Image 1: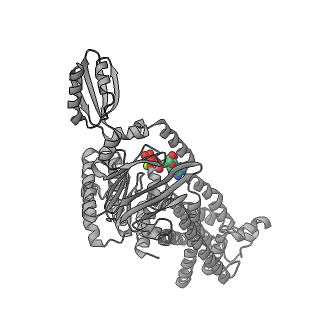
Image 2: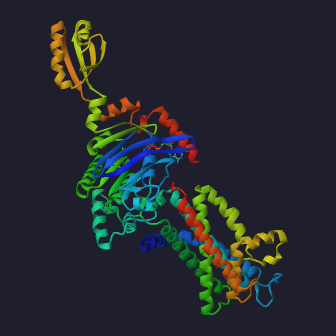
Length: 330
Length: 254
Ligand SMILES: Nc1ncnc2c1ncn2[C@@H]1O[C@H](COP(=O)(O)OP(=O)(O)OP(=O)(O)O)[C@@H](O)[C@H]1O
Ligand SMILES: [Mg+2]
């Protein structure tokens, strides 16, 4: 059974189409990732799936319930960690957790155990009774994560959960999420800016740009399909004989040569480097050094969207969209 | 549809924050106290036209100040919801399984409790400047009336907070709605003293009937009959509850 079925979902803000006819489904118990540059529409999709925004058109089922017609049932099956702050800073960390758990009707006994459990996952045991107002940014983020994990929802939405957290905390959160997924069959859908995160956690990834899904597959297949390995060679003497020898080989995707340096895009680099040497040998070219670079998910991402996924160097387009959004919010 | 735990959580949160926010307690009663002390003592000897001489201005003023206290405190609740929306906490509440109705009731319960606490504080203070308290049963009825007033204004506040999501807009509302509502209500002087055109606005101001009902029960003097005041307040209470529920249900959370 599918935990999430999204059918031609669209959201317009004025004349801006933030989410454009998106369809996908997520299996029960799957870890699913949404990847895309700033302003791609990830948060908007999540807001619609969690019933906070009403779609302009299209529909979606969460745990079998329609987000438009049955929002109450959708809400009792989901949990969400928001991208933007959503804590009550006038309460202590423990009170935030306590109230959240009570809203989900978790009994007093169980509440105590689970609060202790999530506090230790995010390393906030010592700060639990301090007002959230006095937390650091990272501590607030950790508290939000703890709160989203308390009630063991069937479908858990994580909107850039570990943005800005230190590596150690991130790792322990990832492991906890994996564990929830394994032990309680929690379906997880997460957006992230961290490629390692998507690679480590997600079984399947949808890459989103301009409100549309432009690729959807397992991380491994995305890497295989969209980007071949890079092999760079340093050769002695002219490179032309080698280049003509390589032409027409189906495992060579791209060739670029510059004096003694040859850069190749090759499928299955480690298997094909020996062939490369054979051809060089046959054409009388001497290779003096070789290096192999395996693609990362980030390379795939840049290849598909033309934008780097990190915020600091997001595309100009995303920046414009962000400006547009700020104007709309005023 | 009504989840008591959710209502209790929202009420409790309001109480905890109220107790912690000393400045809010002081801020919310400071204005009514100034009014009470300066107007009450200043006009003590004055014959205000339209107020029977044997009543005395302090007796006349105190129910008006109680109405004002509730109006301001309820407006605070509406402002609190806008702030929750701005700081993101509202969406956290809205994705929980709690029904919209329970959320509205929970916010209302918290706001109304605070209004009543503040009004009770004012009542005690007013004794210090010479207000003669009515009998206990009359005080009990006065508290019910105050509850009605507070329900009406909290729901108006909640409705506005779903319609106007921007905080600065809400400050305007304090100046352009809350103050006029207060001044028009006859809290300080009889509505009959106002010119005809303005009096029309007084009669559509819910607080007019609230203050009048409080006077009726607390000092035995009112412009309308107590039954009519209470009927109008109850009807307005019901209408505003449905109104805020409707807008809360319908509006998008973000
Ligand atoms: N409430 C809104 N009003 C108007 N435009 C909006 C609103 N929310 C989002 N947008 C616009 O919709 C588009 C998608 O925004 P969204 O927040 O979904 O992006 P995102 O993929 O989550 O980006 P990020 O990685 O920065 O979080 C953006 O162009 C944004 O400006
Ligand atoms: Mg986002």
